[in-house]
Length: 348
Ligand SMILES: Cc1cc2nc3c(=O)[nH]c(=O)nc-3n(C[C@H](O)[C@H](O)[C@H](O)COP(=O)(O)O)c2cc1C
Image 1 (cartoon, protein in one colour):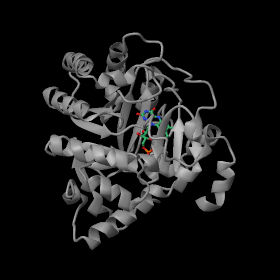
Image 2 (cartoon, rainbow, N blue to C red):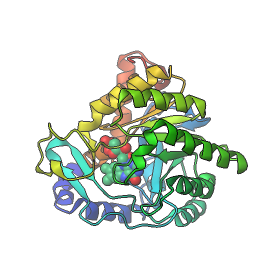
Image 3 (cartoon, helix red, strand yellow):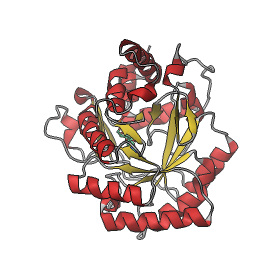
Image 4 (cartoon, helix red, strand yellow):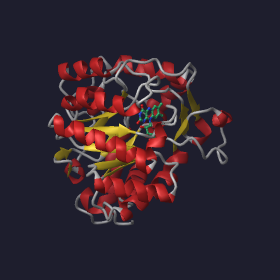
């Protein structure tokens, strides 16, 4: 069905197609358990003291303002991350700002955190109880000079609504945000976050979402700080603003973050490095170029506890979570692995 519709969808501007998808998902007409698969219990696992139905999540950026997460759970995703949410609503960068690179099975986006703002998102989630595990990804407004303030505001306003919160320090489209990969800046930010957590008695898991464009000394620093501040998990990784040389599509020189297939190996390398350096003690959510059971399994075997995807759904359609789950179950069967938990880090 999707392969039939795809040329029509791809004839539209990517952001127009996305807005149409959000509109149609708002009807929430998908039948319950439509995307459930046989033997899904092989994919059940526990993480952050929560029971995950399966390890295939939808990454941040698709449901930026928490409008359709309950429809997305029905697509069969084990968890959904909404956001990035900023304290105040913002439009983001001028359009056009999302580009398909069909020849590379990739996207480039420079959206710049367009979203409805923390108050609207918080109210929306409070009024529409999530029917699955919901992560809320937070970040600063473009105009804010002290970005730490914005993380504090979002944390205070949104922690009630989330099963976990993601501190997004890795979007390439917000100037200066990636500077938080620097040891001192990250320490300062996490000192403030931990203070807010303590003062507001926030006990939700806090994760940090990392850039794929970091070097080995930054990896060591982030690991040291992850341990020092008892960070609950890492999301590896966001899109890259480099790695354009091997791309084939004419859109390759658009400014912004590159996601999809070209990010796959890059994020895998990082997952493996972090898993080893953290000795498997800090859960990793693996993201970047996942579009099949094999690619999800590869990330898990290198140390990811669960995975997320975005670009894969654009190219393969809404049945992608179901397909990946079926393929993962068959891979587990072939390797005589009873539950996906046992595969975490086996090839790291
Ligand atoms: C159009 C688009 C918008 C995105 N917006 C966000 C965002 O707001 N916050 C965020 O943390 N990541 C965002 N991402 C990054 C994804 O969450 C993910 O980390 C990245 O795309 C790599 O995964 P993929 O290769 O499966 O797409 C966005 C990605 C795309 C393609």
